Length: 621
Image (cartoon, rainbow, N blue to C red; front, side, top):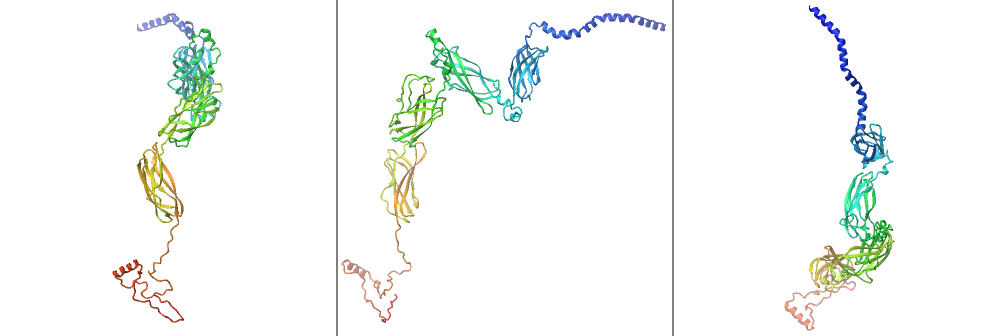
């Protein structure tokens, strides 16, 4: 029974499997067909579906700009590529290098990463879309070495692009606080300066030389710091619109930008910025006819002379009240144009009326408005003619002056004006100030207060000296001193202190001259001048030194009263006569008083001693 069941089961399985196989194939037939069709339609329709079904097609592929335009090859830099027609999958390619890692931002913006180490030079940029369409921007990126000494060793391999690497400042935009410029009004002007070069611009300074506009507040100089490649800086400058723009259609603002690169090379960029001017009220035809000759650009940046006093001196060097002196000025033309018919006005003056930019107007020299309280011209007026001064030329000008007697010690400014014209006849006036110092030197006399005694060489003598204040004011003196060469002095210095007008101070010095003849005595007294500086007054006296007095030498062994050789003293000669009493001396005095002789009385008579005639020998005492 069991075997029969197994046989039946095998018969069913083997009999039904063909049927089951056919049913399975029928059930799987649509799925298999779909799977068989999927690889072919889904691979290509997936790409084409976006192009056909996108309601906003990307448009034609184009590159408008690449930022930054200059790259330093020692760091990784991200490029921003702007344009149109970009799609997800677009690739940025640097010619002569290869594709970059690209990020799709939008249909008009792509980001690409530039690795470090690229060779310096200019590279064109291409964008390649997945469908093979390409767009290219020639020389869009400039790769440079890093600034500084580290680039020197590598520069030898690529020396060609090095001379072209420099900063270059340009004006991106500018404007004014008013849509039209009104003559005689104050305005604020805005500028945006960009570095369009390939190197860093350092020490950027913008100056406003003047012309149709005069700078306010800042003095016409703005320091802007440093600008890297592609960087910009925006700043404001207050200006005043002059009346010269009346009747013009356009006013011109000149801006000069000076800067250096990292190696210290200096550059200069000059910009001419134009602004519309409010029309004048004189009628439409007259207003348009005035600016027809386009002379405004030349009038704005007019190159003008500039006269400066570089040095000044006086003769004598130290000025005192009542003294005459010569003032010498060294004048130099440090401008950019020649100065003609230069006139110097001491104390300040003008050359008639003139406009800000030097437009000549009628008028003459005005030199009488200066201040002459302390110094006054003498021998000539305060106006001197210099002549013509070319650019860089110098000229010395001298003026005779006198210090007024009422001038007190101190420092006094003196105004100096230069009136001249340029080669085109425009008038200019340059005003400057110099400073002169006035001192009050004490008036003193130094000499002997009595006739000095005669001086002998090798012998000490006295010097009766004195210091007298002959000035009109009291003075505080220091040491009063006497010195001399070839001599020895003592007690030759003494402190004086305050000395009233007309007062005197003695000095009794001792001197031992070494040689006979004229001897110069140098007398000096110290004091502090009006500017708290130590000073000394000196005076020289000459005296005569006589020869040394003769003295007979004395034999220290000689006996007083000893006779002359050859004489024979006698007994009692030279003696006082023995013991003489006081009464005897008084009597001798009376005798001498009455002319009776005052010899000492002696009882002894001189005794002669005879010797043989053949020999005569003096008797020794």
